[in-house]
Image (cartoon, one colour):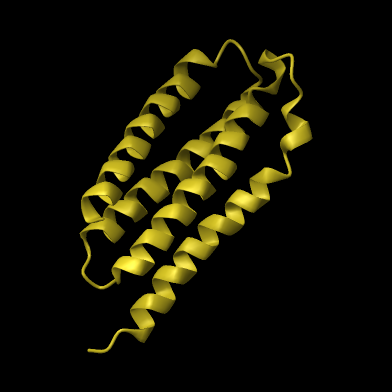
Length: 128
């Protein structure tokens, strides 16, 4: 499980760097400056959670069951939160109105919060 979590963290981190560079350079001429800031928010949270998973995958303080839950919650949360933000920020570039699915952004945020709560509760119930 640890190897899988670290691999997912590496993939999320690499994609985050690629999207961050794309947002800083490739989107400059395509979307409004305030939308670039929104896009960067998605990148920032994706990178935070790549590092979060890196910690989870390398610690012995968390049970395997909790690690599995944290991985699922974090990946789902990043997909819902960060990726919906990417599409919402770039909405002007698509024929589909991503504002219609904007309701998934807070669901993603909730999933990310729950991942942290699972980590916290699992560490708190640990003996020693």
